[in-house]
Length: 130
Ligand SMILES: [Zn+2]
Ligand SMILES: [Zn+2]
Ligand SMILES: [Zn+2]
Image (cartoon, rainbow, N blue to C red; front, side, top):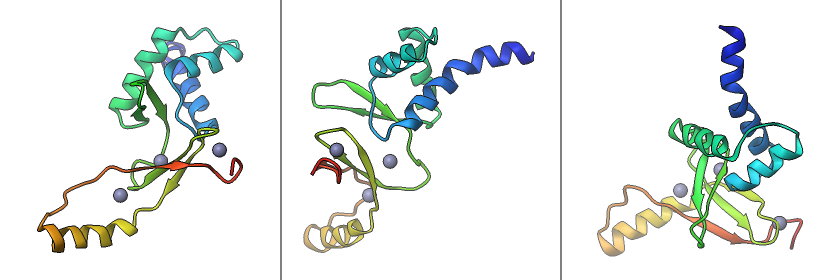
């Protein structure tokens, strides 16, 4: 059982390792490129299939950019937060959400709107690219 289980989990571990190494969203093709650089034999279709599975389990976050391309990242799912994405290098910073509490209050006061959830991203340049 051991050897076979290793064989099954391996692409998943390789892909997770690539994602963990870089704090940015990577497309399936970019992940596949990184894996080729490491001389692994994971095919692009395996990358897609594995990403699908990881996403279904909530282990990766998927994001679709303005061109409609999907990209993936590993981040802390237990902790609600937002992403500040660098337009130069693609680096993603996790941003705390405390400021939204005041916004929800004013939404309720001004519009009578009860907020159930929200999605937000921030764009700009990171410390290194500024
Ligand atoms: Zn995150
Ligand atoms: Zn940057
Ligand atoms: Zn939030």
